[in-house]
Length: 215
Ligand SMILES: NC(=O)c1ccc[n+]([C@@H]2O[C@H](COP(=O)([O-])OP(=O)(O)OC[C@H]3O[C@@H](n4cnc5c(N)ncnc54)[C@H](OP(=O)(O)O)[C@@H]3O)[C@@H](O)[C@H]2O)c1
Image (cartoon, rainbow, N blue to C red; front, side):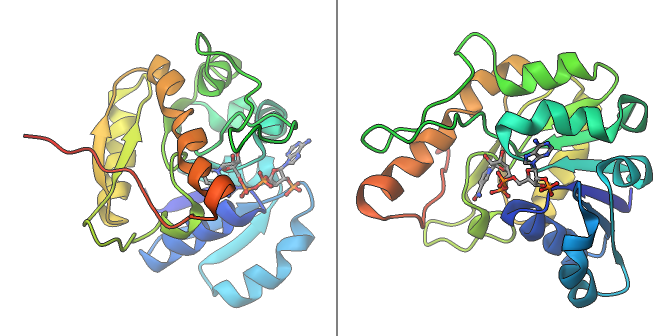
């Protein structure tokens, strides 16, 4: 699996696209307006390309979804269910509502009974969604360097083979991994973003990541 489609013109899309390139993968990065990724493409080198969501989803052997949470379902529609069928889709998205945080606590448009990734999995049943990278700031997504050693990435998704695909990538990217099983675990993983952001919003501390300590 060497062709990685990264759906997202934002910071997460850029950091993960660059991370995949640095680890030897070919990357197509996508936007509704691919022309705005021209600067990135010219700097990223010969193994980087750009396209629409549908072009990238069709080309990629593995797909990364890195779009605004409120637009994630629309982005899947644009990518096309047929282009995603059978593919591992890394879902980095958090269901952050448009309302501003209250005392540093983000608002979500989902509930604790249905996560965003469950909605995405229902929208494209033939895709193999895996939650990953959602619980850490983009500066630490690839090769995180923290005083306490490798932090823990929490992953889940219904397809064990897809989770294995993502775990191999996470090992390459320098992560400890906690595999939490099926898609419902996203109800617990997605709110970790609220916790991660809280010290940032309240006291401008953004340089941390979660680590699970085990016996
Ligand atoms: N920023 C972080 O450090 C961080 C950390 C962990 C997780 N996340 C999550 O990662 C995701 C990406 O975050 P980000 O900060 O890189 O970017 P973002 O600003 O949240 O999202 C940008 C992307 O969303 C797409 N988009 C926006 N509105 C759309 C619509 N109506 N239809 C289709 N696509 C639409 C944009 O498409 P175009 O290219 O066409 O404009 C662009 O590709 C988010 O869900 C975020 O919660 C972020």
